[in-house]
Length: 176
Image (cartoon, rainbow, N blue to C red):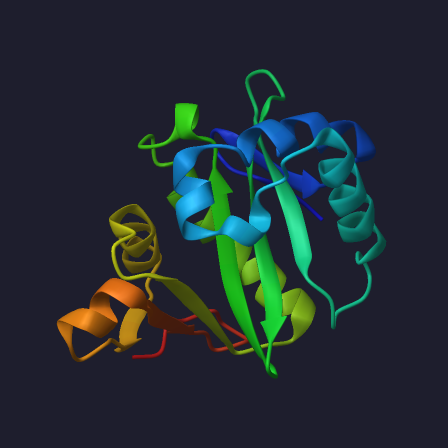
C-alpha cells in the first residue's frame, strides 16, 4: 500500500524504520495513552517492526503503515487497522515534535477508505482514552461519532471512549 496526500506518504514499514519507531514511541503521551506501543529498546522495536512486516497480506492481522513526510521522507508516525474481537479499530500516532500540525487527521482521512476497501469492511471503530483530547479531535474531524461514553466521573477518568465510522463500501459515503 502506498498512499500519497498533500504532505504525507503512507507506506509499508521497512526494517530500517525500527530506529524511528523506537524513538517515536518514547514520548510521554505514547507512554500514557498506548503503553503497549512503547518500545524501550532498539531490539524491541526491531522485533516489533519485523513482526508487523510479516503481517502484510494477512487480513486477519494488524495492518500498520508508516507515515512519512513527503518533503524529506522522515518517518513521523504510523496509522493502523487492528482486528479486535471480530471488529476493526483504527489507530495512529504522530511523534510529539510533529503533533498539532494536522498530520494525524490527514493520514487517517487518506488511510480509511483504502484500508476498509482492502479489508472488505463497512465499519471501523476509533477507541481512545477519555482524556486524550487530541485523539478525540482527530476522530471527530474524520467523521467518527461517539457511540459509547462512560457515565460516571470515575469511569470517565479510568476508561476509554469509543467512536465509530460507517462507510458504504461501494461509494464511500458516510452513513449517519
